[in-house]
Image (cartoon, rainbow, N blue to C red; front, side):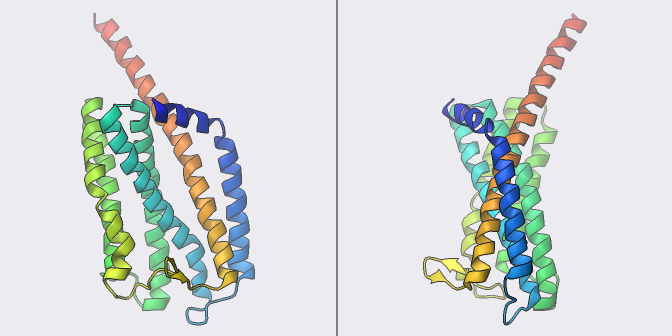
Length: 237
């Protein structure tokens, strides 16, 4: 119930999340595409980074929210937390696809290939498959309690993929470059770092806005289905 109250309180300010996300993304895009300098090695292609990196970060954050919500649901059996997890999975698919598509567009002129069996790319594609499997499972089961329980278990098991995604560039030195921002420091120019940070924060806020809207939609959908079920049972009687 603590999470339910927190979600309800945040939903009062969902419009502000949307406005702030829009402003940050517009400013970040302008700075990234117009005022920042091209990379000395990648040239103008580096500008895809301002979409690709925030999308990848948001996808992983969406899965982290899905994992936390799934653990909480199995513990407290709070339906609105299950709705939030369900919403996070759908939004996670969107951001994962954006990250994979923009990554391929960047890879073609840089690596001369749309796709390579790089550990970072493979582990990211696996996350997409886990999220799609999670959503498919939720469409197959009619028992809502079993649907939520099994989906939460899948999300928790699949969470093992996240540290593999994060550390893959450290564990395996392949085509994918190491992290530009880490505990070792920042290895990116200031005029590129600022728009990248603006876009990252903007994408996180956009995720929060989408999560609040989608959670409400799922809650209302389940409420409507429950009312229909009660009405049909009365008709049959």
